[in-house]
Image (cartoon, rainbow, N blue to C red; front, side, top):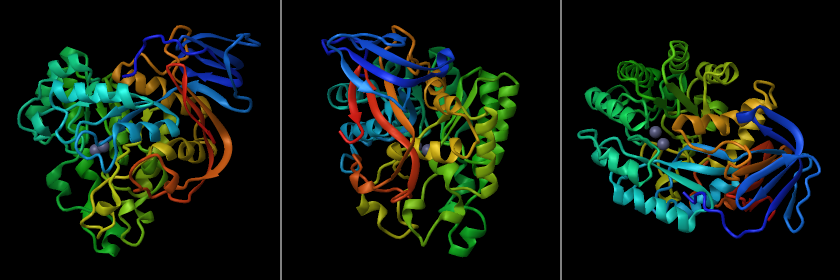
Length: 435
Ligand SMILES: [Zn+2]
Ligand SMILES: [Zn+2]
C-alpha cells in the first residue's frame, strides 16, 4: 500500500471533466483539485497557481478503480509477472488499487510473505497493492492459516483462490474466525469432485471439441454451501469470479434475506461464452470456464438489477511457454487489467444495459465496500486516487504493447469503444494515454 503520507509533490488540477462519483451521488461538469496527495476541492473554475494541469474535457473523472481479484505472481513466478509489471499493467487499465491473491510461491499464508508483498509494492508498484491472505496453510485446505498475524501485516481479505476450500468444516471455521477480524472471506467456488478433469464448460461445444466438461453445478454447489455457512456464522462472504445463472440467482436471494453476501464478475465472463472457445486455443481456457449463453445473459441481468457488486479481472498471467501447449496441458487463466474498462464500456454501457454511474459504482465504491477500503471516493480529504477515462475513444487492443510480462489473452486485436486516459494514485499521475 503506497498509503496516505502526504508528499512534496506539486498540486494537480484536473480540469473540465464530467466528475462522476457514486459514493457521494456526484455527476457534474467540474474541476478536481488535488493537494498534498488528497482531494482538496471539486468545483467550477478552480484556480491553483503552480499546479500541474490535466485537461479532462470530454472525459469522465472517477474515483480510482479497484480490482478485487488479481494474481501478481511475485514471489515465486516472476517470469509470469512481478508486482511492478502487474502494477504497471493495472495502471494502464485505469486501476489504482488491486487485491493480490495469495497463490504465490510461497503462498501468502503468513506475515512474512504479507510483509514482502506490502514492501515490494511500496517500493515498485505504481498502484496500491492490497494482499489477500490464504485461508489455510499452503492453501492445502487442511489447517487454518494464521489469519490474525496476516491481518496485522496488511491483508484485507482471505481466500484460497487458485483452489477452492473443499472442507466445509474448515470453511465454517474460517468464516467464524474472519468475522471476528472484520475480514471478508472470498472463495473460488468449485467442487473439485464435480469438476474433476474438466477443461471447459460442460455443454455442446465441449462435446464437439471432445473436451471434458466443468458443469455449472460444480460452482453452484459451493456458492450454495458458502451462503449457508455465511448465514450461520454471520461472516462477510464474497463469491470470486461468479459465472453461472444459478449462482447469480442464489446471490440475489441471499441479498434479499439481508445476508452479507457479495460477488464479482470478470470481463471475460460477461463478454464471451463457451461457443467462443476456438481451435483448442488455450487463451480461452480459464476457471471458471466461459459458460453458456444462458449463463452469460443471467450475468448481464445481474449487472442490470444490481445483484452483481463488482467487476474484477482475475488477471492471471502465464508465460507463453506454459500457455502455448495442448489445451489439456495448458494452465487455466487469462490476463485482464488493460481490457477490463474497454470491455465494460463496450459491452455493458454502450449496449444500454447499465448507466455510466452504475459502471463506475462497479469499479469503485462497491469493491471498496466489499473489503472495507477507505478508497473508491472523491470526497474532499480522501486520498487522491483518480481514474480519468474517455467513454467514446475507439481503439483496439494489442497485447504486444502490454505492460504485463505475459500475453495470455483471448482479446488480442479486439476493437473497443471507451478506455482509460489517465491514472492518478495518491495525487501522482502514474499512467497517461500516449505518455
Ligand atoms: Zn479462482
Ligand atoms: Zn483468481
